[in-house]
Length: 93
Image 1 (cartoon, rainbow, N blue to C red):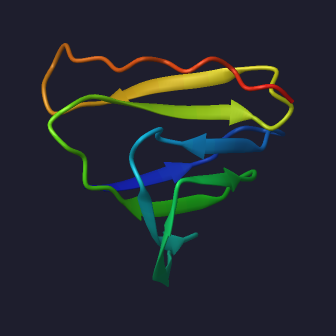
Image 2 (cartoon, rainbow, N blue to C red):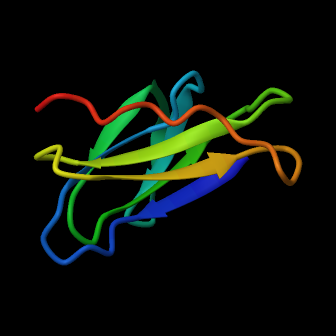
């Protein structure tokens, strides 16, 4: 699955991860890269990252934590409607 993450926040940098699912970055800001496997990345204002994931037949939580750890957004990546993964707690600063 190819995903594109865009930081549209006005003044916030985020740490982005999908616990338990390695990501392969293939492009940044529309420019193709030599693929690099990662487990987390930091995304600044107006940046765009494209990456490939190979999920198994289960749900995963997509996590974006603000760099100062004052908040977090979470979403679910799943093969079927109604599936949910555990949402990790906000990490310490």
